[in-house]
Length: 389
Image 1 (cartoon, helix red, strand yellow):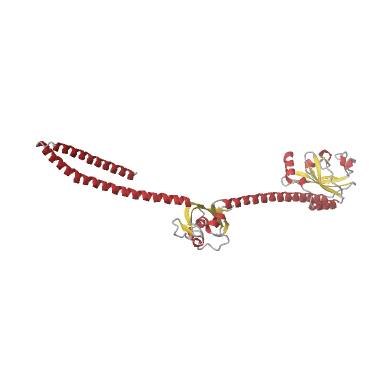
Image 2: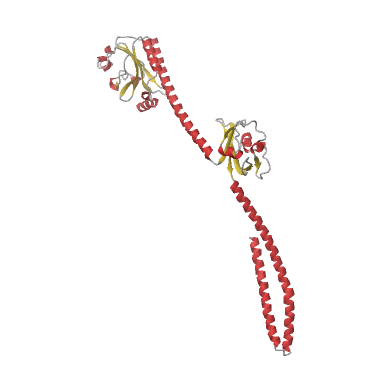
């Protein structure tokens, strides 16, 4: 379709860059092959013909309807016109009748892309009649293929350049991100050679692991310990090693990094294998996230629980003491008070008026003691309930 052809012509961006020496060399060879002095590379869009390069004169653009190349362009075949004024298809053309030129011999090979789109022609012409042999036509057709190959190479170079720029920009963005995040990111190849070691990794480990020898004594060299902060991590249990060796994803592994300078860092580690286009393992990557604050919170909570348990134990002991006190009060105060009360009642029965007042005081004292016992029992019950909570 014409729209697809025009899109392909635009994609090659041929008019946006000056012609290169290689194209001029092709025109010189084409003119030599044809045995004439003039040749050109013509591009045809929807309305015009543009001379990209011309040998034997300055490039002249014209309307597409005035172009000799446009006469058989849609057929996408080699055009061979030994004497244009004698050919009714070309006799009235401005390039033939003197308006733009006085061409008599004309031949052109279409420039067809690998996708089948015709962009223009490789054209040879002369002001004298001339005829090509089959071999010359074949050579000119080959030269048209070389021109397309040159166009294709230039397009691919431009595409690769754009991809390289995009890749560099993406790499710069990735590098900036890895250097900014507060997480250690480390990657290695299939031989456990470090290929990535970001800022946080350097700060926590006090060094870079890039260029290190074989993976031995890693815990000692990089200060890696189990979550208890005392037991060194075995080399074969390192998350990066496990991900690389077994091809599995590890998450949530807690470790401690004893830094050369500063307090230890408690980290949570995730590791994953890196796979190539055939799903083969080509390396591994891990991320270490600082969970020191979370670890400290857990320690504080555990310490608070221990204090609460100790307080509950002390409360239970206090409750037991309170029960013992209540029993002592019952035995040591209430029993003697009951005896005194009985004695006063006997005195009152024998007519001693003062004994009645003493009995009232005994009763009041009994009420005070009962109140103290009730308060003690209530306090014990409340303490037991708090301990259960």
